[in-house]
Amino acid sequence: METKFILFSGKGGVGKTSMASTTAVHYADQGKKTLIVTTDPAANLSDVFEQEIGHRITAIDGVENLYAMEIDPDKATDEYKERSLAPMRELFDEDLIKVAEEQLSGPCTEEMAAFDKFIDFMDTDEYEVVIFDTAPTGHTIRLLELPVDWSKHIEESAKGSGQTCMGPVALIQDSKKKYDDAIAKLRDSSMTDFVFVMQPEETSLSETMRSSRDLEELGIKTTKVIINGLIPSEEAVVPFFKKKFDKQNVTLEKAQETFKHIKTQTMELFDSELKGVKMFRKSGEKLFQGSDANE
Image (tube, rainbow, N blue to C red):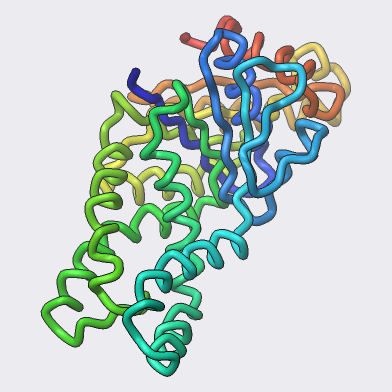
């Protein structure tokens, strides 16, 4: 069984978590064993699914085949440090362990730890679909760039002092293959879909274009753009909404033109908050069976 990876990206507040959750419920309802993971420190999967989730894989109530996890950056960092230090504890004295611990205390470690956890899920064949509700765009792209620099970083350090910002090179040499494999999966659009969620506003469009270009430079193709938060046409009778509706449509056309070689989907605003399995099924009908869903 080959796992399908779907990564959702976009700025905070565009409805990325709602679209990722809608997609997760859709695949689980199709009978596919699905996992949704968030790497966003401001994650709210617990809020939207209305149950406690946290830093462990949790079955979602009311949906067979659906599991979720919120990666806690602090816990991920502790686990990563412990895993890096464990083999050293038997070989070195306390002073050397202290030095290694200090080296493992930079921001580099936190980023690496989040990425490492993320990679663990790309290495699994336990699920048919793994959905990542990623951190805000800039972070995500930085995380995706890491293994690219990282391989070079490891090679250069191995030739030089044997140290990296992650401690002794020998400890993490094993991870190199894991990261290279992950980046290869991210670049393979038959295995990985990269979905941007945006609002029908100029700033959101330019941000999405820029992020999509940055990814392209890393060899990762955007496979879908969801334009979320459109005012339904029947509501555009009120002058205030009509003005906003017209403006949104100008941006929508521009977005569809910009991403004409990529699948675009639109999502209208709901009159209530998009949370809870029932609402995700409702939005899933629109997203996957809507006339503009191109599914």
